[in-house]
Image 1 (cartoon, rainbow, N blue to C red):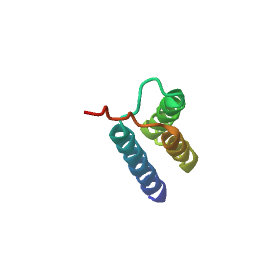
Image 2 (cartoon, helix red, strand yellow; image 1 turned 90 degrees about the vertical axis):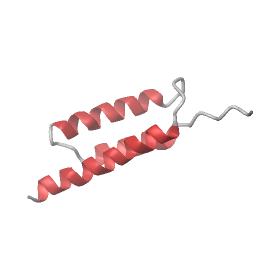
Image 3 (cartoon, helix red, strand yellow; image 1 turned 60 degrees about the vertical axis):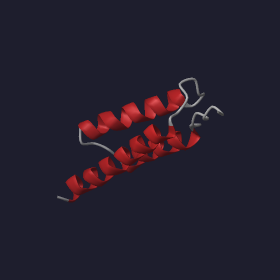
Length: 75
């Protein structure tokens, strides 16, 4: 039971990071976009297989922190 609860909690953190990523409206050409894509793919695949680890979720967080949001165009 503990393992399924841990997987659920890690999955919830992962979903929060995806939500934050979406809200950031990240530029497509940003230098760290590939790092995000890789970290997300690995963590999401692990989540699907129920083998998500805190380290994988943390990799997603670190990649997210490096991303620059797009800047709004002045009116």
